[in-house]
Image 1 (cartoon, rainbow, N blue to C red):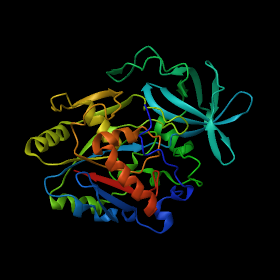
Image 2 (cartoon, one colour):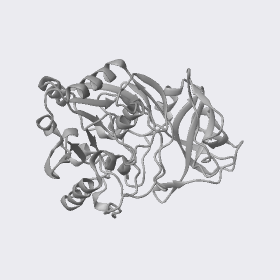
Image 3 (cartoon, rainbow, N blue to C red):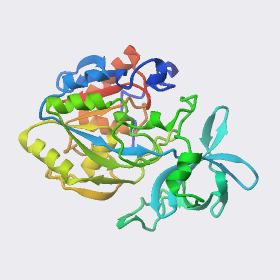
Image 4 (tube, rainbow, N blue to C red):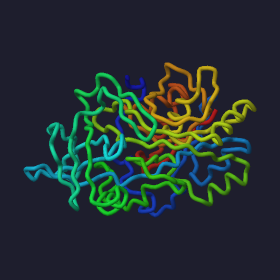
Length: 366
């Protein structure tokens, strides 16, 4: 998976959003919004609360209703070494894929010295046993839905398969002892509420599906009143890789009938389908066949959307600003084209747009 030519830029530290917009004196929907039009590279600079003026009656807006878990847990090795354990993906029963990181100089670094069979002590009497590197060759399951792991990635994987023992129900334990996952550019701890979208319905994401963070109930009401159809799907995100910018691992998704019917009808009528975030694109493209037909489905997706294959399900996307080597840029190139992305990203850097989960947003329209 290569770097997108022309976008291998250096992100200035001052363009990293270090805190939520609310802590910068802004409402959620007062972050900046760049609207870029693919056909002529036209750019419009606005606030996110202006979104209704860029959408029109009949547009279908697809949102990811996955809620963010407080997925960062303090963990301790037998010798007392303190680690941060990041939950990534729920595999089965008490089994998760996890990432281990070591606190260092106010941030954390990937910790690769753990061993299979090692038991990590967690707060409140909980434990995590490291079973093996993830992914593994055998199948695992969530409910009745199985997934096949990627081949050949276990040996150098940053993730582990871990079996947990919790003294209280899982979510209760996380709410008491966990924190939202954060990285070095976010210098303070913020409550879980800052990492939730207003429309989250089911907790399960290790990291916030952040493209939807700026929505407010009032803004959604305005969109619906205008005739924009807002429909849901669910995709629980795993832990991103800051160090290696690797493709995403398998993630669990669920797309209901109401959404597939709305998307299919919009495509048939020539109306626009706009994805709120890369997670929505991944889920919709997973269930769209080569002829463009889309069906309700649930399961696991390993799909990585790249320019090598056409994007069939969506016409546009609302997304954040991605780092230069992030594989999400390959998806955006598939939607918008390399030239258009170059124009938009050059302007974002020049105009001082903020990056990361608390940053500004980019709406790409046909």
